[in-house]
Image 1 (spheres, rainbow, N blue to C red):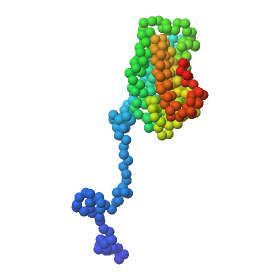
Image 2: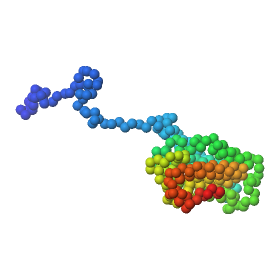
Image 3: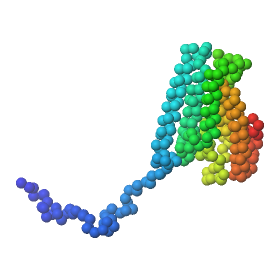
Length: 293
């Protein structure tokens, strides 16, 4: 039996009503909707550059990161295998240099993108990996370096290029120096990119943009162009490790000419951007590349 306090059917119908859209055009229906369009949730626009073939393509970035990581892992494993850690300083296989060179290249290109993404995110495009944006000459140079090392191994006695150099704990002096130059060069370049932050760019800037400041702290307090310093000595260090003579000379000439021209051009713009501030800064710092004031 229903309680005397329960509402009757007619009361219920009077209290609760149901809204139904009118059977007219969709535009009129939207205008008569009880929910205001201004209160409707806004769907954020998607940056189309992250789609395939875009300059920040997520698929392109992930593929390159995967290939670089795989290359780094495999080449390091091969290097350790060829060195034979149980007999490291007595008779290491000469060609450990090639796999180590490949690992160093993989690490270099990974760090180029990673540091850009971490400290200068808006410029974290596919080209930040520097895998192809450096041009054909860059790839030819590294291929030539690997080829010279292999040719020297198969057609000349081991270390014939550096017979006069002595060993340090069983390792040739030029290899020790090369490893040191590679380490210093990579660290300085990575620090330079991180400390410059949004002021760092892989291309020379021809106009001053909002927020562009003259960085003078960290490695920039000593070196005027630390990223160039780092790459120059890293490049020469790789050739010492590989035991290359022809490519060492070639790298030295090509890199010096490239950075000398680039620095002169870039500093003309920097003086235009910052005036006397940059002139004073230039006097108190150095480039760190021989022959470039």
